[in-house]
Structures are given as structure tokens and as C-alpha cells.
Amino acid sequence: MPEAKNKAVKQDFEPDILVFCCNWCSYAGADLAGVSRFQYPPNMRIVRVMCSGRVDPSFVLKALKEGADGVLITGCHIGDCHYISGNEYAKERFEKLHRIIIKQLGINEKRVRLEWVSASEGRRFADLITEFTNEIRGLGPLKFY
Amino acid sequence: MCQLSKVQIYTPSKIIQLILEGFEDKVLKSEVLWDCLTCNQCLKDCPENINFADLARMARYKMRHTTNKNVEELIAHKGVYTTISEIMSRPYINPDRNLDWVPKDCPISDKGNLLYYVGCLPFFNYEHDKVDSIAISTLQILSKIEKEPIVVFKDEVCCGHDLYWGQGKLKTFIKLAKKNLEMFENAGVSTIVTACAECYRTLKIDYPEIFEDFSEKFEVKHIIEYIYEMWKEGEIEFISSSELSEEISFTYHDPCRLSRFLPKENNITEKVREIFKEFEKLNYKFNEMAHNKSNSLCCGVNSWMNCNEKSKALRYKRMLEAKDAGTVMVTSCPKCRIHLSCLQKDYENLASIEIVDFSEFLIKHIKIIDKNNKKEESE
Image (cartoon, rainbow over all chains, first blue to last red):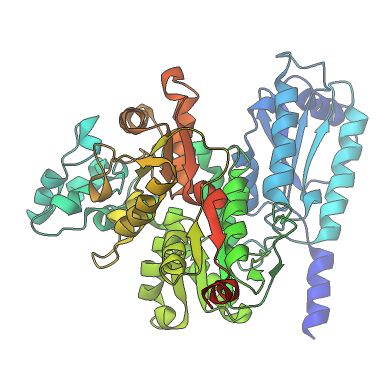
């Protein structure tokens, strides 16, 4: 019985996903996806930051601690940053966060991801969210409480 | 005298007086106890033996629930390391530590007699350099002396020290303690060796307060105690490394967790000095800093709380004392090493001092005495 119940829970499971979007590219990309009426799952919440370089690894850890099942950080493509090199910092920090903290904590690395989305890529934003949500749904809840 | 009062207005005696007079609410509301370094210098001079650090810890537990202040602003490194500890306390998390740092000639296993409790060192790699070398040299020393493989856990969790003292998160601390106890029991260890002053104090004194039979089941040793015992038993001797040509003067920074935070019968500060005295034969010169043993100055930060200009001023004072005493500064707390070497990046005049951990300092100078050979020689 408990197994069947678990399965039912897994099928019904709706992940909570936190997305950090940079003000200049990814947020505009999300906007474009909305204006163009591309469909994507409603599981994610967007936090707008001025630059992906603003996203401190502690934000990601705190989100995971407070019950997010996945965290997606998005920013401008390398070379397109409004602040010239913010996304390069983000990339550097993120790789360290991934390698040293997320992996060693035993959290599946697929739950935290860094992607570049530009302002014109509305279609890509919708596809990315759909794909990421399905991936987290497959992984199941992080069970953090 | 309170160490913090050297750099800001802070009067533990006044706070105690206010509490005794019945103004506890006022003290909690003023949130002055967030600033305490919990270094326990005031306990040393207190005629009434008031444990101010314990008081600060309990007040923090209350203040977190009663006041609106955003505590996270006070936590250093934006709370990355304390959040890691909190995540580790959750029952569904099984850390998967990267054991790449383990040297190839050191055999390790998951079950056995002697456990090396690494602590959070592999996570500190995130922002700090060369912290792995503490773990490497400690493990090398241990596997040199012990014949059996040393136990190193792949899923070791934090001891909870920083949450307990820094933020008064008692429940999370107990969760971590239970997780740790279960792991120790499953692995069948009887001796726990650690190179971290904070882990040592937590395992030695705080855990037995939660679990009554903890101290009967497990023997907790700091690497200093372990080496001291082995040396007294005649298992090891100290040799000079060939590179030394001229005399090196060095000094020792006593971490608060190994001096003021231990009961008086635990004379770890004397043991380490006895070992250093032996080093004087090896072309080393041991100098005391102006403040030493249980009087030693604080490294300025405790449990990742309040890393600000005041703690920097305290560290600067400590480093100036070290500069007068020698060229090498040995400490036995990884966090003291991290904090003090952080200051060296800002001040060129202090960059010449080499700050090393106790295990890093000893690794080149330990030689096992082969008892069989010795007997043959005497015959």
C-alpha cells in the first residue's frame, strides 16, 4: 500500500521552482514568452535581479533549504552582459557552487542549473522552463522538511 | 577584560547587572548580545564564574524568536556555511563528500576503530585556499602511526557548532548531533580524532550533555592530545627536516575553544607547549606572544558571525603580536587560520608571517620509532 501511495504522490507531484532572471536579457525573454503566448508550466516563480552576477550562492542554498525543488539561474549570453562581465562572475561562482557545495551535500546536480537566455529568445525561455520542470518532476521532491 | 571592548563599547558586567536587576527584556530588545564574540575571556576574569558565552548563546535563541532584526545580515559570507550545516541536518540529506584529497598512500575505510572527523573543511574550499592541506597532513600523521586503515566518512555531517553558538539554533544542533551519533555507532568507532578545535569542544563537552553515555562510548581526542600521548608512549619521535639551515622562530596561537572553553583539568595548552619545547632541539625557537594560553587574543570572528571592521581590528592586534614573536605562527583551529590569513591579503607588512595548522607544522617532523629494531640494537 505505501508504495502505491508513494507512486500516486510522485505522479501528482508539482515541483516548486525558483528562477533568477537578469533584468536586461532573461526577464525580457520571459516577457517576450508571455507576450507571444508561448505555453509553459506554471510551477516556477521568477525573482528579477539586475544581473546574474547578483545571484549569490547563498540565495540558491537558501531557496533549497526553504523548500524549492529546483533552482534555475538565467542571464545574458557571455559577452552580452549589460554590465560587461557580470555573467562571467556568475559562471565562475556557479561552477564552484556546483562542484564544491551542491555535489558534496548529496543534492542531485540537475536541480541547480545555469542557463543563458537573451531578450529575443522567448521561445527558448518557454522550452527551457518546460524541460527543466519536467526534469525536476522526474527527480521527485527534494523532501526538505 | 572583554576582548570586544578593545574595539567598541561593550560591557559584559553591565549586561549581567541589568539582567540581575530584572531588565532581561531590555537587554534582549537592545540586541547587544549579537555582538558577543563568545570567546569567554570574561569568564576567565570573572570572580563569580558567570559563563557569559553560554548566556549569549541562550539569549540568541530567545532573540531569534522575539525580535524582528534580520539575523542573516550578521552572518559572515552571506550565510553560505551556516546554511550548509542546516541543510545537512535534514533527515533526507546524505552528503556525498569528495574524497579526492585523501593521499594515495593513506588507506581509509568506513568501519573501524579510529575515526578521523574531518569537519567542514571540504566545504571551506569554496572560498578559502589551502584548507585541504590540514586534512591531508592530519590523515598522513594518523596513518603513519596507526597500522589499521583510518575511518573517514563519505557522508559525514557537520558537528553543529556554528549553529549552536552563533545563532542559538538548538533544535538543528540536536538533529545534527543525533545524526552524528548514529553514524559513529554504525561505524563501530571507539576513538574520534579531530584537527578542529570547535569540533573537539562540541564532541567532547556539548554532545555528552545531550547523550548521557556519549563519553563512555567514544573517546574524543584532538590531534595535539593524540600526538602527545603517542610521543609519551615512545611510539614516535620528532626529527629535523634536512632543509633547515638557520634557526626558525615560531609562535603558537591558542584558539579559545582549546584554552578557555575546556575544563581546567584538560591542559591541552600545556601539552602543546611541551611538544614545542622538544622542537627547540631541532633548530626551532619557540616564542610566546604577549597574550598567550588562556589569555590569548581572539581571532575576531566566531561561528561565522559578525565579520566586520571591529573583528578586523582584533585580528590586526593579534597579527602584530605574532610578528614580534616569530616568522611562523602555528594554530590548531582551521577557522583561526582562515580568519588570520584573510587579513594578510590586506596588509603587506603582515604577509611575511606564515600561518600553519598544527598538523601541517608537524607532518615533516614525525618519525615512527620501530620497536623491533631498537631491541635488536640494544641486544
